[in-house]
Length: 142
Image (cartoon, rainbow, N blue to C red; front, side, top):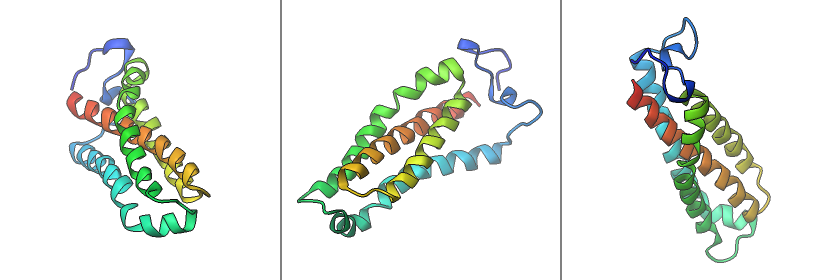
């Protein structure tokens, strides 16, 4: 691991929290769980699409839009955390991405319409994109 300051004043992972170092097993477990969030974000909703469309009153193929908007937002969302990671640090960018993902995962459960669910899924995808980008950056740094 690097010990010199990085671009933009970012600190290496070992210096992120003084006195606490993450081990290799913990890092691998954390990254595996972060990458599993993507599969959960897509695959968990697929079996429920018919019931979801029925309960939210989706017309036609609107239910498929819910998956597509998530994937599109996740792709675009990978562009956003790079600038934040350069300025504030990779760990902070990852923490904020996980927070956004968690909050909008819960919000999706309370959606009252297909449009509201689609908006929540956009932010969910942006959070997932941040997890991808920040997680990959952390892995390449170690």
